[in-house]
Image (tube, rainbow, N blue to C red; front, side, top):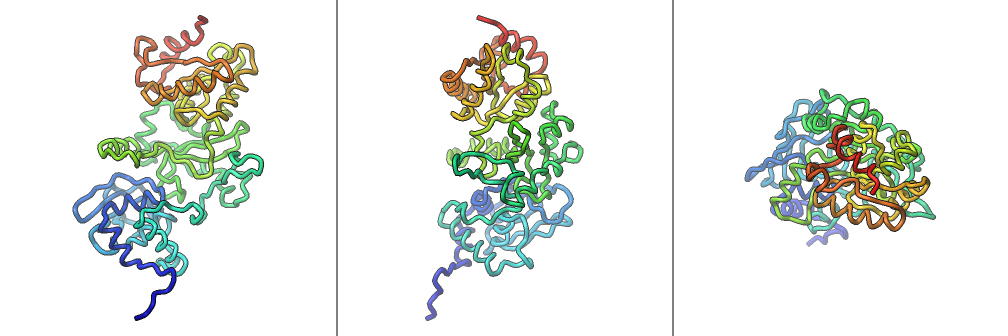
Length: 404
């Protein structure tokens, strides 16, 4: 009997085990941290939109890719005209990981060994090892500093040439809703302030599936520092609402979907979103009267900016010590300076606002800009991105300027 070589991986058996365990597509996508469109399942087949940059020139239907989940090797193919992806489970894994087909169209050599190792890890229930990742063509700089391991560096200063090429990723963005995918267009239309000129100013927009980026299919935002240098790009999951409802129904607390996708290595807790636009718009008088308006997310900043209201965001519903230090430094530079916390008026936002106020109170003057009881409860459940000029001028601003 021949002895198997050391390190031998029985790929055929592993494929059968993964297929037999069910949820093939979800498990592979979760391993590679790839957001999935809506899945349509039958007993023997899973269908979904094509998510690969593979030659198609437009968004596909939501059942274009067919995966035979009960067949050995999980044979799949895309039926979109101009799309070329097809193959077995290993090919699907390679596409999920690299968004391209293997060299020569077939997995062999180092590429085969790489995917076989990943397959073994998935079947055994292991997480993907970051050190084993092949650098993406859209790799963004890791935060490297001998003095501060949590320091973010601008993309333009990255030691990685492919990362430096992403300084102008926004040149690939679509800002015309007529040219966006249906979900992206719906996302923008629900936000009247998100017009092309504003998207260009904030360096955000829809990144099509065929853009060849790890953020493809997302609505993508640039995250600049105070000097307008892009530190990273991050994407809004356009399938989040549907995924969140499905997650709530499943009762699986371990796999809550993410609303935003940040590139590994970026430390968002070290930064405040919207600094360039804030410093452009904010005046000493305004900061004395209303305080530094602090919100949760990028859309809150963008909407308030279009209303002439400078704001900064923590890109979370809690604040870090570093962010609190930065805000306190800014507030304490002027007499009467303070921070006005304006988080979402849902349960998570209100809980986060309490933590944020307590953290800031150690460093500077702070108050809540609004609460669920504000204006007779008219703002309960609202977010700053939904605030109108009338809301601000008739209800929020007078309360902020009132001196008790």
